[in-house]
Amino acid sequence: MAVVSISEKKKKIVDNLKNKLQTHPIIGLVQIDNIGARVVQQMRKELSKEATIVMAKNTLMKIAITELKKEVKGIEKLTDYIIGSCAFILTKTNPYKLASFMDKNKIPAPAKAGQIAPVDVIIRPMNTGIPPGPVIAELQSLGLKTRIERGQIRIVEEAVVTKEGERVNRTVALLLRRLNIDPFEAGLNFIVALENGEIILGDSLIIDYESYEQNIVWAYNSALKLAVNAGIVTKHSLPLILMTVNQRAIALAVNAGFITKKSLPLILLKATNGALSIASKLADKNPEAVSKKIQERTGEKTKIQPTTVATSEKKKPDEVSDKEPEEDLGLGSLFG
Image (cartoon, rainbow, N blue to C red):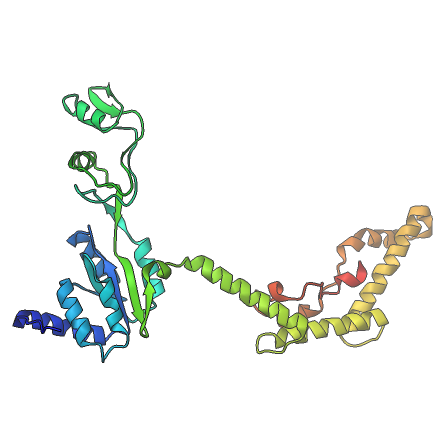
């Protein structure tokens, strides 16, 4: 392979690239086509704590990569992706989180003549603020229906003036600028990221973190519930298993009439509720057979609810209620 001769100025640029590439564990490439300097500077500022954006000519980027083949594992894989306008993005943070941040922090961007439209360019009904004149014919040539309203041109129907994938012509670009319409979004998009010698494609880096976290919580709760039901002892399941065993033991003691410090109040409560239930039925047939005091108590019976065994015990955090076994572990089921 022929040796490429470069000037001292370019050597300094390559050395600077090599230094930065070696000091960051994650090396990415971002697309900067159709992105103005203002957007790049704004993104640099927003990402300053998380990442560094380094721009250079593609040739110099490839030279730096070639010279780092032995020092940085897999870095030569990036060469195939250095096409068109791109830049290095270097970070020590999670590339997925960084890609999601960039995806959500794009800014409105104007359409440029000759640019390939990433989405349909739509002009909706609006008052243009433009007085009648030759511009009417120009608008109509783009398929826009207009009328004069209070001395100004009004667009009366929505129309697509450039379809996705088509090039924006000069007339459309000038009109959009005159109407203060920025139809596109500008920002940095990951092409690829290199981590531990492996390439991760840009599309794979965009994750809905909120849904992802919800799925993790659901999976954790389901696994914990399964462990409790199956009696699988882990650091997290043991307190719940012990709570379950304790509740079932007390429930068994109450049903069997076995008196302990914890079962006695519930046994008495069960007996009281049973007695009040009998008194209520007797009062329905013969009110005189039951004292008024007891009748008042029977009216309050529905308000007397057995408390759960764990009332006086220290309760686990909020997730406990979601992770208990499917059957009711409280003692309410004993009196149903």
